[in-house]
Length: 512
Image (cartoon, rainbow, N blue to C red):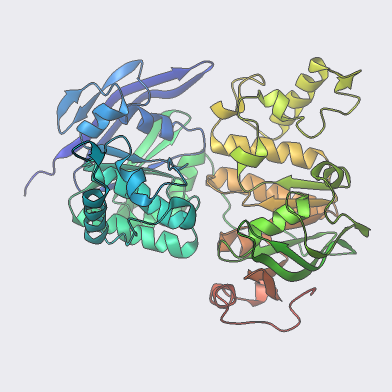
């Protein structure tokens, strides 16, 4: 039998950052034509290892072999020349540019003195067709869905001739339908002779599409196994170092009075058309109301209207019986509302501030942190240290900038800050996006703790499993309206899917 060629070998890779060993003597072997998963908790060192392979970081120790030859990957251009491409978790696209303009950026074909857009667009169309990506070469990035933007990132690597493709958390921002489509795309890429390394913590996807999986925990390789010989429980235990409970443990909710009442609210989207159409629902004390829907049906605009970030055209929003419609974000926050935003980088943190400063973004003006207009850094640091310990935020120090933390630890920090405000209403928007099973379990437990303290929780998520497991009631949003409110114990993913696509409405679904 023919020996399968090793296309990537990383030997004894060690990478240190101030106060942390991100990769500790890691060995990795990837064979040609396989989909190889790198599995680990947030902050385990997976992305660091792949950033070394892509030339963004240099290791302190170790060597890399590509196609069985030792190479020095000093920057991403060298990686590209070696046939390595990387699709990052946070897309690197210029929004006003077209698909083709983004793909050729820095690599523009010339016709005389001009950029030859026509031949580039033709090549992009051919690549798109060959790999069944179905992308319009002339569409503007700002006009296409997140799933399509990701396909543009894939095309970018293929256009540069990549044979080894690294995907960093590729499904973190996709809908269930887009995830299904991406899995088919990955299979097509392998059929065409590509090799794929998939950084992920989603066990379902590893079982569905991967051949091998290497598990990393706290910077070290724990094991490397064939996917056919393992199962999700075993992988989860290796990843976090203990058994993980996939079922959310919670008692039956005992909801009381309405904390949030949304009454016939209409708001415009960014393009000046209605994103919310007379939407109505209540969230009661002691319950978690989950909002399910396909991305782009008004979820983001709803959060912004509730938190004072978007103007409400008509209708009313009441918090604890008091109207907060079109009040400022600070007034709304001070009225008893906390908000875990869907985009932790844009809305949750100031990435260049220290962790300590990020912990008081909404409370820095409180007397305990502010004396006569001067910040009391001793008090702020003490407060941050307490929250970081209580919520198990892994950071080298409270003075580390937020951007240096992994996505999961950034998210835990935001949740620590928001829960610590002891709100009457906690809005959690995509709270576990891009997180590993250990962090997801932790966050779900915190949401249920809030509920059990008699608080109201509004959960918005694109993950149907999360909505079904965590919510006490599920409201389905479609084209800016609630088309039904159902009991998670008495519904199915199929029924929710029908409602989410406008194929079914439950009468009286408004303020159920």
